[in-house]
Image (cartoon, rainbow, N blue to C red):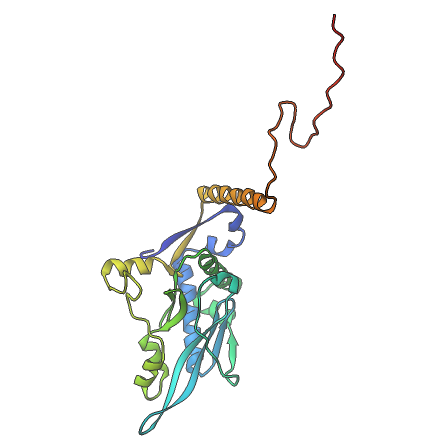
Length: 270
């Protein structure tokens, strides 16, 4: 599929992504497009949607006092809800969703009927994609996560936040659209790419690192490399925990798991 990237995982990690390994890039993108359509549909009904492991989409109503009149604003918001251990040094804006807004879960049966895939496969795709995205963030990689007709979850200057499309904000705002645009983080194509300069090459690079446009692959080299790194880390950690200790060289008659045998009596000399 054009504009997708290949993400390599080890054999040990492959058991965490059984659904993604069975789906093509086109099928993964189609599932997430349906998820985005469901989220946008609920927001138009003034309801929120919880995407487990990622965050909550909602629509808030605000009154902005101007110098001459009061503006009524209806705009989208996103409240991040990820495992803090995955974010590391990243920061994210604090978003408050009013308690009177009804938060809906993802309806996997409705999603399944829309794209003609079993509900378990749709659920597995959603959960495993979010898990893979969390892994990327935890390893200090910064892929963007796009939601069709809604916006893009991206990281710029170590700030992870949702940037909404102008069309999404305009479609949700019944009046005073320009005020809603001013109050909402907007996605600007090419922002954060090549120091803010929008180029065709920069846009292609950004699209190549956007979830969910990826293909998962199991790599032997990836597994071997990570095993060596983990072994070096284990040895280094052991040296730090026990400073001053050192290991003796193994004698020829020593074998792992066996004690050194006591030398027997010397044969009598003639």
